[in-house]
Length: 353
Image (spheres, rainbow, N blue to C red):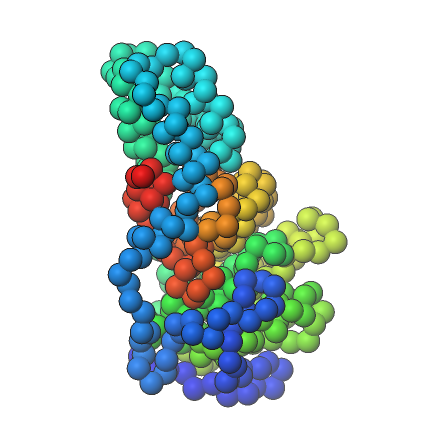
């Protein structure tokens, strides 16, 4: 697939040659040795060995606060007592997986105990492990353009500070490494730093950036971007959106308007609507998912900053309550530390000592 040659356009900008992408959403530069797309080699020099080890290391705090406490509870126990079940309930309730998900896991555990299908606490742990995997293993339907000539459009939402703009840059890098042309749309026009960060990421990974001045109408930016993407035959469009207006009502109304404008320009778009959540916020992330799901109808979740929190159980709660597939998880600062979510690897990483 031919790589689109970026040119400056009146009313937008597409720039080249930045030295470092931003670190999360703080605006500070990331390490300059991060692996990014190369137009010369069309690949990245990245050793994939030890990927699971990095995942497991990134989930250390979650493993300690969640499954580590379960291990300590079961250690040396020969049978399952009502007291043990009460303590298990407390662990689950305080592990940020949410009330509804906790109840589902307890129901599954108590059902097996009541039927006397198991008496060994270690077998109970295996039951919990398998049930958590089933909650995480959501069907991931790929939404593709109905018109083969149009780009794949992914609208990315999330409140300020969750790592939304940085996640978009890292995802753009993945698409570029697949040989796809990418356009980044700076529709978060209320925050100058977001536009600047997205521009740096575009320069870094070799993606076109469409933007306007701070305070411009986000829908107008999205419309211009779609017009340009269709005419230039761009493969993938990633739309960055605002994370904060004066009220949540205003924010959701603005996001719905951007969504409609994109759909009018390209029927069926946006094909994906992904929500970025900060795992360190715990159950507050579940509340955010509920609000954005009602407003936009989400097709995927991105959970960032799992490496810095003991609240990784929120992954289980979100997947269970909304049946929305987790697309990516962030387990570090490097470009490749935003990894496609694998439910089997996640469960193995938090359960296997």
